[in-house]
Length: 93
Image (cartoon, rainbow, N blue to C red; front, side):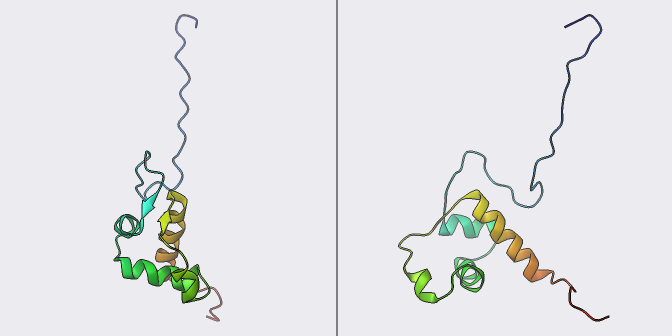
């Protein structure tokens, strides 16, 4: 490196910043941990999954132990925010 030259620093924006604070070392979450990260109860998490992910309650019951990856939590968080902020697409106004 020459005299008077500063090292190049590149700032990469963090995808999903502010959407969900996930611990970087955590690769899987239990049902209780996932609900806690999302700020909802386990029953609300199950309801969210029933209404958006699985087709029947039987499908949900066939999962012996639910575990979630950080990407799963991101999708669930987006689903939660879309439920609380419905868009007006399709509105005729």
